[in-house]
Length: 182
Image (cartoon, rainbow, N blue to C red; front, side, top):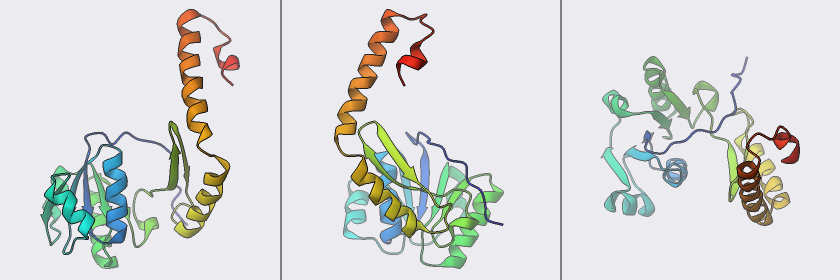
């Protein structure tokens, strides 16, 4: 039976994220982690030009070319993103023994978390997951939703948030807030 994943959004601000693998998958995960305020530590034999630049600028801490289980000591979250399924499995198993959540690129069902296909429009984030069954299908669905939720949503939600704050400040005890903001 496939794992059932709980959907949630978490703050990664200042969290130590270990990424093992410097290929296209690792690079994509690192880009999103950095966008969301994570501290990224990387293990990779080879680095793309972009990853080399990020290491040189200090945005990423390169631990070395070979994974060692001691690298998990400082991790809050782990991404096993190598092209080696056995290494990814070993990383996921070691992370699980330490109580760490791990995303496993080669077999998402064996990890403890999946990263959904997502996009943002200002304060709006829409995420789509197939629980690791078909990342390609999730990406297709994301593309459909991206076309339906254009840039105007960012402005709309920003204005709605400002209006909500102003109304709550003027009527702090008002019991109809929930109905009003629907």
